[in-house]
Amino acid sequence: MAADWQWENAAAGSAAGLATVSFTHPLDVVRTRFQANDGRLLHLPTYKNSPHALFTIARTEGLRGLYAGFYPAVLGSTISWGLYFFFYSNAKERYLRSREELTPGLHLASAAEAGALVSCCTNPIWLVKTRLQLQTPQQARPYSGFHDALRTILREEGWKALYKGLGPGLFLITHGAIQFTTYEELRKMVIRFRTTESEQSFNSDVNSLDSIDYAILGASSKLAAISTTYPFQVIRAQLQQRPTIKGIPRYIDSWHVAKETLRFEGFRGFYKGITANVLKNAPAASVTFIVYENVLNMLKLARRKDI
Image (cartoon, rainbow, N blue to C red; front, side, top):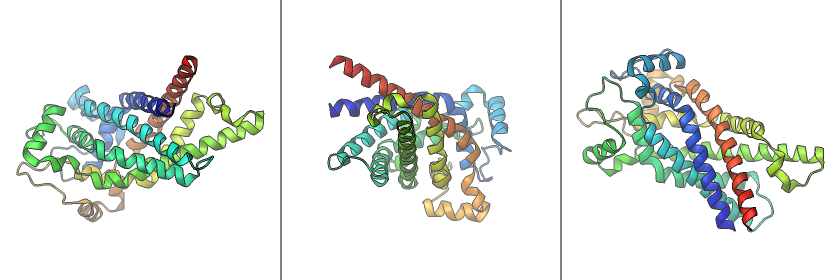
């Protein structure tokens, strides 16, 4: 029974991830280019704002530019969300064995544990996605696709290069932890409010929330996470850039990125692309949780009918 519940969470998470990335990928390309561009990259044009970036990429690179890195994004998002919800539900179940209800701290611990495991599993996929999104027609020796990028990175830089950006990626587990903790607590508050209002059983939460509720809760929790963790995303994107033709990386480590960003761009440099990020992730989080909760409810109902 417990195993069924965990795999239901994994399946719902994967479906949510696939729907989300398909809907929002062009904004992800814009965000990545803003994050990586410090004005010193000759092959990346400078954009005024997110709409200008979308228009420029569409005009100069076409649909292929707007969906650069789409395959690793779909693969990474589907795997990440599936693993995340699986690890997250598994951790929550483990903590619930010794108590009746999880505290906010245990929700945070569950989300952090899931985030760390997912980061270690999927960092190579996100590295390739970032590099493909940063390619333009002016790029020297471009990758032809996901598999070519993997082969080239392994041949030219070694397997360790696949884990560039893992450090800030692990710091970014606080993003998922903040998002899921906020989501769980807001969800609990809404259910309790409606339970008191309608005198329903607390365990009837499957039917007490609808898709609009999930959308609002998902967007709210995502905004809370973005506002606190965005600089780590900028640092990771900078570290994951492709080395120069001579094989020299632009940055040594996270501290080097932070110093150079502060030196050339000031504190604003740590929030490059945040508009595109919010435009992408707030509705994306809504889509994710709508799909996740509805698929999960559907799977639960199907399992009950089989029993």
